[in-house]
Image (cartoon, rainbow, N blue to C red; front, side):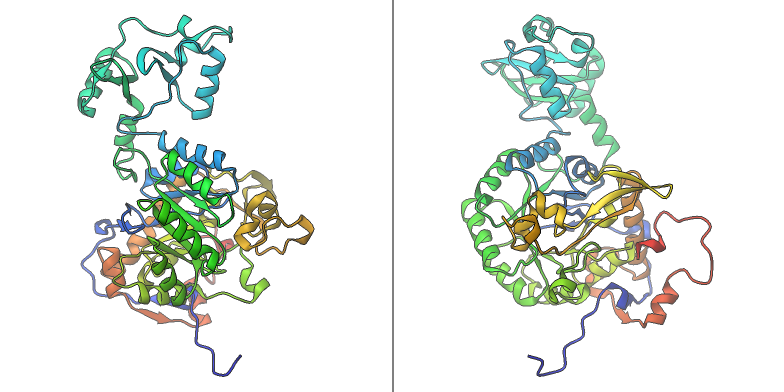
Length: 488
C-alpha cells in the first residue's frame, strides 16, 4: 500500500566518488579482502555461478589472478564435483591425493584418466605402494590399447623423495635428474604425494594466486534448495570445495534459511555464502541462520529481467549500503552481485560496503568462459545468458527461480540470452579491472578496501553529469581495453 512517499534507491550511475587529498599511488593500494568469515582472497573479484561464465577452466584462471570462481549448479552433482576436482588438482605445492592407476589396468584406462583430469603422468600403485610411473612419453606412439600398464610403465631407478621434502629441495632433484614428476613416499614406499615441475613453475608465474593451506587453488560451488542439495553438498565437500554458495534469486525465503541451517548443522566447518538479497532484514535473517557471507543483488544484472517481469527488486548501491549497515561489526562480508559495467563500478560497490564483487557479463567474453563463440557482423562474440533465461531453466536452473520441474511452455523467464564481445584472456581483463579500482582508491586517498569504506564519500550526479562522465563530442577511432560504449 502506497501510504507514504517511497524512499530513494540509488545505483552505480547515480553517484560518483569524491576525490580526496591523497598520498597513495595506485601501485601502493592493497587489494586483499575477506570473501567470507574465514576465507581471504587477494583481489575482490569472484566469477558468477552461471553456465556461460564459470566452469573449471575459468575458475582456474581467476584463482591464479587472486580471485575465486564459483562453479555453476546446472550440472549433475557428480559433474559439478568433477569440475571442482579439476580446479583442486590443477596445481599444488604437493598433490596430496594424486590420481593413480593400477599396473593391471590397460593403456586405454590410462588415456581416459589423463584426458579426464588433463594430466600428463600417473603414478602406478599396488596396495598403496609405488611400483612405477606412466607419462605421456610412454604413451605417445603406443597403439595397443589393451596392453597392461605394467608392460610399458617406468619401474627401474624410480626417483622419489621422502615425506617432508621442501619445494626447494624438490626443485633441485627434478633439475638434477631432468624429470618433471617427483613422487613422495614414506618409509614403506607408500605414495603420499606428487610434486611436479609445472606446479613449481606456476608458483613463480602466479605469485598472487588464491590458494588453500595445501597450496591448491581455491574454488567455490553453487547449490540450490531442492531435494538433491544434501547429496550435492556431500559430493562437493568430498571433492575439496572451499566454499558453498546457496544460490537463488530470492535469498530471503524460508527455503534458503532452512537450507543454510541444514548445511551448517551437517558441515559446521564449511564456509557458506547465501543470496541473493536486497534488504537489511534479509541480511539480519541470514546472519541468524549462520552464513559466513551474504550475496547482494536482486535484479541488477545485465541479462536479468527480474525487476521488469516481477516488479520487485532494489537498486544495487542502496541494497549494498543497507545490508552493510546491519552487518557492521558482525564479521560477515558482503558480495555485490550484478550491475557492474566498468571498473569504476567496482570501486563504488566496495566504498558502499561490499568486500568483493561477483562478475558475470564482464567475464563471459573471456577465452576461458564456457560460452560458445560466435561470429556476428565480422566481430567475434561469446554467448552469455541469464540463469533465469529459458535456455538455462530448461537445462536445470529453474529451481533458482522457484520453477523447478515445469515444462518449457510454462516457464516464466527472468532473464535473457545474448552475446558479449570476445575479450581474449581473462588475465588481461582482470588486469584492467584491478587497475581501475586501484586508480579509484588512489583518487580517494585509500590504501586498503577497509580505508575506502571508512573514508570515501559519494555525491549524486544528474543525468547530465553521467553524460559528461562518459566519452562525448568525439568519434572513438581506437577502442580502449577498459571502455566500450556498447557495454551500456
